[in-house]
Image (cartoon, rainbow over all chains, first blue to last red; front, top):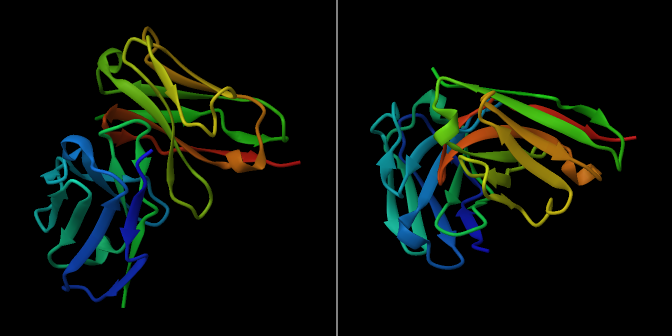
Length: 108
Length: 116
């Protein structure tokens, strides 16, 4: 099973700042089959990025994903108030599909 | 608009059983692989089970294998999760999700609470 470790656990930033979230896999993620999800408080998770760098439908271009192999990054270029949430990475290159433990982006 | 609507959650005693349902609309259900994902209170996301589009193959997380059964009825656009031998560790919101490997459409979830 591939273990995904997200860092940091919590990121304290101000609106307008840049956020950089990391997701490290215990072994290489096949085909860069890595996705990112956003979960706002009290809401359902929402797909942001798939295939490591492809934005899902309707996702603003301030969200970008990068990486391959074992190291992946989600970048939010300028934080908007609605971006303060928990972010999860997920690998779907091998079974079982696994999630990271999440990174909380909070208002500083 | 895609809608996935879960039902069947509730309070159940340890060792008990429960069946969750998920009614799908706005997508071609019969060609969609589907999964159940759960989230314990205040915790992260955990994959539970997957079923292929025709129901021919099913997969389970080790934590539920032998206790949970995923199934579907494509004529009714409905996904199911039969859960048995429930324990406190199964307390969670259970989400019905469409899978392309990544999970693009999520239901609102149904809460399962295992407690005496």
